[in-house]
Image 1 (cartoon, rainbow over the protein chains, first blue to last red):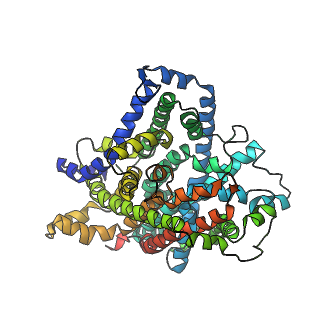
Image 2: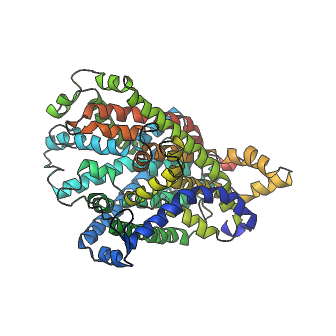
Length: 295
Length: 270
């Protein structure tokens, strides 16, 4: 379908309001951060240009490297669990009627809870002495303590994220599935296609657009995860759940190192940008089925 | 259609709903107990049904005022996001123009800025404009991450609509605005519903920007909640009650847009 888009430079006028409204709040803060990143800020009026020094510091920071690997591992785990689970649940949803409405409302609920509350609820919920999850695991004889065991803490943050954000994938995939015209299924039935073939050749290609959205959104948001693990574990035990944004905040707020923190932010931003760019082009590369979301 | 249903779908859905609802049940559970009971001992069910935590919220204007503030800027933001994104998404899905691919990707990059360091420039910008502590400030700031999302989701849905529909309408003598509102919008209802919900949701739960840009008059509920963390310890019960109440507005929104999501736009029957 992308080949059938007609050239029309006047389309710029339809895009202009979006451009202006986003640029208004995006360009100036971004340029301010770029400005900070090349200066040593000693006081409100005392600034020294230091060039690339903060970038060198950031690139050599071994704690940052550790946080970056931790972050990458976490984001990959998030994608590997949430995307297939979300599609599976979307396919299991009733297609219409009050059951569909009820299921939609119930499934979407975790999305609506402010992030600081999510962390707080899980903090109690996962406690082995007073929380439901910890208590039940205790009854089942699983030794589990997210406050002391690094792996348990990491896993708890992951499960919390799966709980919190899989609904987003479900909603997108469900809306995508609902938009597949019946004729596609009828054609598949006439061809005698198996259930798997229908999934592989009818449903999955038509879902590509919404899955690209889900994939990128989950990648960038999980890569910037801050509030939930901060409240749940405070980054611990040790540094087991100290992800990038928390390390950044420690630097920016805790040590008042605005210059290095700004350089760190930009490097951070560029990493996300690069990963998203690669993902975006990977998913779009073999786009030929005329699914939604092709650009 | 029955032929193509997922095997064991009831089981999948059942397990998933259990997984989703148990932590929420625990939040409700916490909201009905006092702090001593919450941190004291495990209980499958609350010992008593005490609504004291809810009474605290409804009895204090600084608490329930937070809900009103949040609703105001979230609704403003959702309306602005969808209204701005509709024509842009249409342009991206139907036309080719100079720099379109770059512009589209640039829009997405605005969701990728780690907030910690960007808060200070935001604060300076909105102070300079004299918008600090207004609902408009938060609504405008949230456009940064909601408009790109809205454009993106809507574009996906619009690209699923065959171009022939546009062309047929023009041949039938429809003007663009009339075509857009009368024919095109009903076709992408599902997309508009999903988009509105996502804009509402992301604006509703965002904490850092909303907290930075407000102090008294427009202070949102997410910021007021942080008050439950104090030197005297956590006020778990009140926080849980406030959390339960934050689900309600969004649940209402999804209930209203569910028809659009659930029905889809049955393109085959157009």
